[in-house]
Length: 128
Length: 152
Image 1 (tube, rainbow over the protein chains, first blue to last red):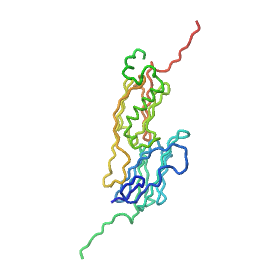
Image 2: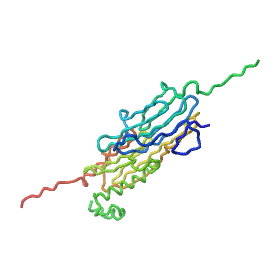
Image 3: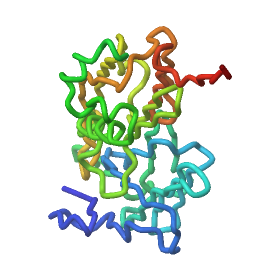
Image 4: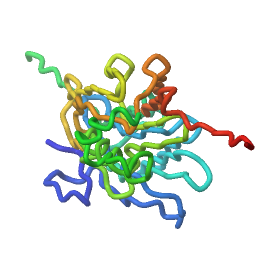
């Protein structure tokens, strides 16, 4: 069972997360850099890892406004600045308060907690 | 350096005429692209992955190595040869299923030659935000020199 799909990749999964666009909508002149991501799913959360070498914490912005998750990173400044950006559409129900981001050695680790009601539940069967 | 002419024959791309010229730097850039090919594989055109500069007294090499820590990279310098080794594994966290894997595992081990000898004792390597910067001071005999012309 799969909850994730990035539409551009034409994968066979269903549509829990689809990519909205690769490029920044504002016609910024800064050079666009590749932003590869890994997406994993656990029972309680989605885990996203992204390579953003050269981005300092101040230059990174992660925003979630259901259903869109946006990652933007700025690398360098002035004429030599370049940007990383990707936007995903997340159809999995998330808990907006349960999102945490950590940047370590140029890798962003984003934890996205699932909303309580979408977590799998185990129903105990009692003997009658 | 003139006495080491025989060495130049071993590196055609650093022929005597190219010594210190932009062509030499381009060659090194290509070497670096091969070196960090694993990092680059996922990259789209325009991705910054590595660069090589000659600022006069130093060669400055930078390379994107996201996810690698100090312990994952080994660097050795001897004379005019730099050897870099590094590895990163991309393991699926336990108990998680995979939806998307674009980040690749990285493994590189490569030696390459610089246009001149460098002072191995003064080489500085820094790793910050997933970017490795290697500053290699040129050996004394390769440093730019100002020759004063004396009046006869």
